[in-house]
Length: 484
Image (cartoon, rainbow, N blue to C red; front, side, top):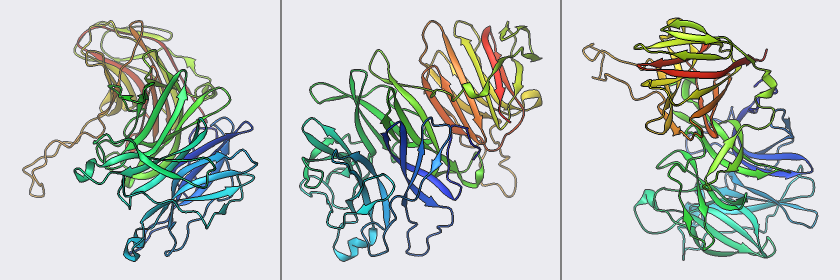
């Protein structure tokens, strides 16, 4: 992975669930690490360790020694699963992590437990072999009990957990479990904080305060592969935003960390099988980070971190007409009608940026930004603005169409949508600012304060473009830039 890109992936594996802590101006990002050569085998699980990387700006990253190694096949931590790291206040740091070993059920023991390790410097960690916290079957199923998120809540420490209640349809028993402690050693298991009845397991759950609001964030994979948020009200009830996802469904297991003056949202952008747009999503990938803020209605929005766009030194560009009736000037373009038109606006390289403000007052049926557009725009990734439907859609053209009468066909005709990733369109003042970074296969988009990150494997090179169809459209503030 190139340096100074704002993304991070270890050279010998994948970045997974992150456990961040901010100490003395540095972000320590502990994360579940899967080695690229770990193939597992018949009856043998692939293993997870806790790796450690530090950064001060989320542009440059420094790899640190491996933090917590997984145990052997008889240990409760055959996989060292996700968790959290806290400052105990006595000169030590405590890591709580999920010990996962499905074979333990054969021995009458819990498959998943909470374990802990202690450090004085965030580099050398010692496992506390005397500590193990299991689910209380009064409230929870025994074998799902992971992702311990520990935080200070008044006079007590509170632990949130990925858990399941005993009753209900199998894929709807997921709950946010709880436990409390006064010393980080002795814990009392409590009833669920949330049992929404929508998912098999709410993972990487977290509670935090931001700009006068309290939030619950968690990730789901059985109903929607996304990280979602709820607003916690003063009486303890929760309000679910209509658009509750914090990112696209290509980004998962997002956690937050409070720095000196901001709260940062961090997750992993999944790779796709075969490095192809139509490949299925895989576990782990690249680190992705945004700055969180609370909107006026209490919902959460995302901004790029300082320096993420500035490093490109983007400059205004005068687009070039490729098709249709356009009026052009430096940094601006207006479409005046016709069935379809587009303009090119600078090269779309493997490390490039594009920015535009789109007027939402036009009459065009379709408007948007093209990425890696080919000559003639026969193929491109499209960021489509659907103002009437209140959404943004990332799509790819063309979609695959098969001839069903071929002797080798299974009667497939039109493929499932290659992308069709949707996010809310939240705009003020009748316009929306779009900012895009292309970083290899990663495509990071901000539409206003809405983040949409995805992969684009099959297309590369080409140009950025703006397009419209059947009506009028106006674009301004057009700029582009690239890094060598």
